[in-house]
Image (cartoon, rainbow, N blue to C red; front, side):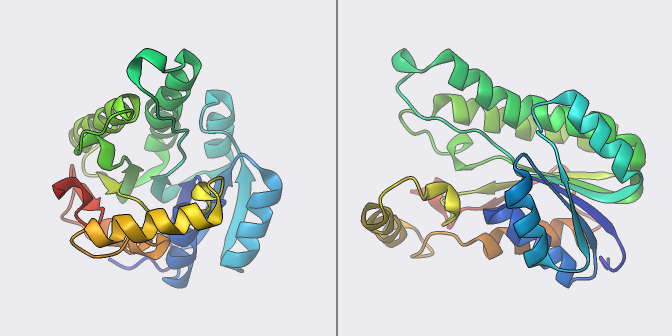
Length: 238
């Protein structure tokens, strides 16, 4: 299934995996709408993608903004949501506001997006959510992230039936080298990537293009729905 002239909306496209998806989709001929909270970052990202792209600033946690977004977009073929607020801590110390932010970005945000996009999606179109390895590999301190990721996968399975023939899938990344890690000191960050990479079956951590390729597969494969595609280098296995 070709992406030529297809309309693709990516929420969380300012950097990292979302930006890589936007670039790859545009290279495949899609007309891409990049969505993010920060207008400046979004404009830079859109310039990187090129002539086949434009930007709309909106926060996935704001239902009114998301409703207005899809009023502007109109009809579309593929929707991707990568936006997330993540936090890690022992459960006894977990901040309630941080827990709510995880739930809002990982569950309510995708709910808002689908609620307002579903009637505008083409019948041979798709929705792709992003969960994460924490739902399948228990890790101390990741309980709220795991819960949200697992809930998102269940949400997608239900929608795959409810919205059929629109296809609904989930990509579950592991550790991916993106700007979201930049708050960690550089030397410490690269030591972490190197050490984890040695433990993974693939012998490396992920790159944004790994995830972009997975999303393009799900957009273009008309016989895949209700599926979680693990793009984690085998992280859930160790």
